[in-house]
Image (tube, rainbow, N blue to C red; front, side, top):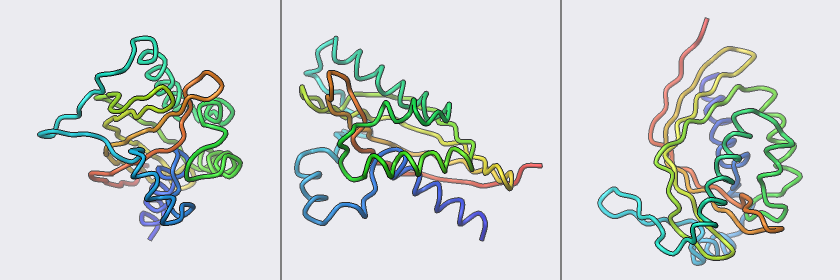
Length: 181
């Protein structure tokens, strides 16, 4: 039972603290997000396709924004994390995100390992960053550990001349839990 509750919290954390709380979107809004290309990414033969139209300056800024987003989450620094999030995100409310992330940071030790980071879609106002991600989580109260791996698309928007996270789409591949002594 405890492991199931931790899995539920982690799943919610991936969808909320990282950016997209689907139940906050109406069916029309969710379809609009999909139609706008926000939820998709291109794969051919298992390979992630890199966007070909990304100017070098924006590529550097977008990847730096993604690195800071992951570093802030791994450091569990709420103010730093919230600086990486759009003030007008799609699919969640900024203030609720801040409260929820603070609660998760208080109850869990969560580290993310990312690899295969690729900008898959780009426009002057929005970019999608694909990454393979492994989450290593430990519930502080019980010492129960959980690991999951998956693929994530982090959607950034240009806001106040900086790239900010507006939504996140995560697809988990596997998970395992254990109890630490």
